[in-house]
Length: 265
Image (tube, rainbow, N blue to C red; front, side):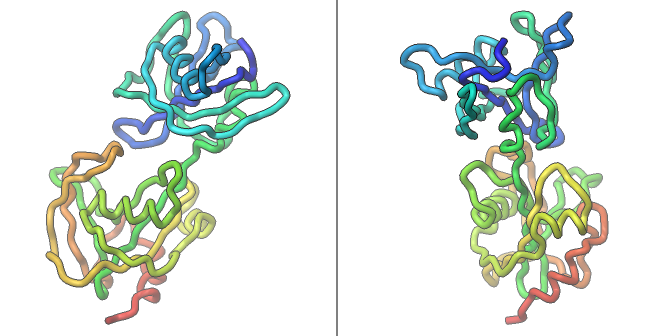
């Protein structure tokens, strides 16, 4: 097993319950020196890097994956690092061909065997949070039939090849159906968000956006997209900003900053 093969394939997923980004690793039972290894191998004649990644994962883990993107190329020795994703929901653990597979949380400081973790930091996705207003009202939603889940505003992770504003527009539309917003300003960048809310699994960026006037005051919306919340029904509504309920269960430290950002029509 080479510390850095010609192609290293990071198999990632969103956890089906928590939505956390996870990476597939394997251990070799009876050989503790081979712990937290990711799949990878050599390029066969006529193969592209993407084809090699898909084949190696199938051979080593016994699962089918789709190529997502190439993350980078290392040298001395040369090696391509790519991201792939499963084509179906997978169990938490399984064994295949003498390897014991498991999922671990994605993190910039995740330690992997050999040189296979050289580009793992590129898997850490940014997150956008949308404070969408209509006049002096804020767009919030609750999970239908799940009273234990706190009130929220649209938020989600940035997909590969998206910038922050494009991701924000997509998340707002997927989670609420509101598809006409004007982004006014950044309320908190990654560092400010961390200072206000504490460290999280993602680098979060909060924005103030304004929706087009009119429309209903409340409605139900089935979440679209490919995330773990796809298909859930959210009960969306506009609430006066001064009467906004706690978001994610706590008072929101960005509320005052949002009020200052609003310009009445």
